[in-house]
Length: 231
Image (cartoon, rainbow, N blue to C red; front, side, top):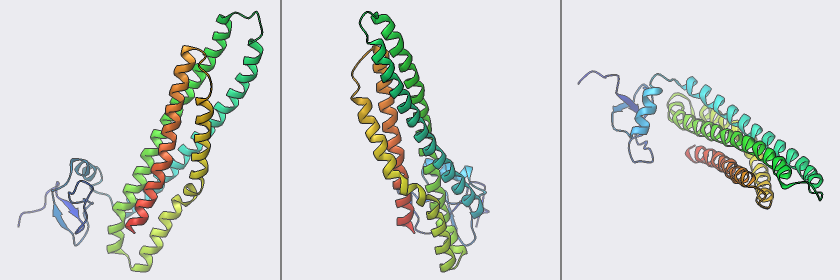
């Protein structure tokens, strides 16, 4: 037969991606080869063509650690917004006194709006990072499973899988509380009346950012459940 080329991708028998194409993995002993795969999976294969099982483990560990950092950052940002909102409420009571021109009141409110926009953009960025890290964690573990099945005995394989799941166990325990907290904060923001055009834009952006945060919690749970289902 022909010699194997750089574009040949080793695949575990029977593995398929969601598109119906064969699921690709880096080269491993005893596997057949195929160039049949979706564009997405082909791109990933090129990037990870030389990976071994320790590379996948390292990448998974780093991804879940960075995902946890993003969730921590989201919580800190929401706490900052909450504290500043409380200070603004007190300040609004002061500037609401009779005789203070609307232009002065708007200056204070619009300054707060800029603060909200800044924090909302940071929330969206952290949600984006976290979502990407959770996706990477799930992908690396799913890629790793068939490799370890071939390399390890049944007990060692189960031990490794349990270790991977423990990486995310702590996050799974706090996600429901985080989701509830973000949802409650979102309701609070939505109930703030329309004050100025700039404030209304900031409010809308913040609500979108909070929705993004809820999505990362949902994705985290789906990623772990997907891994569990494949083990």
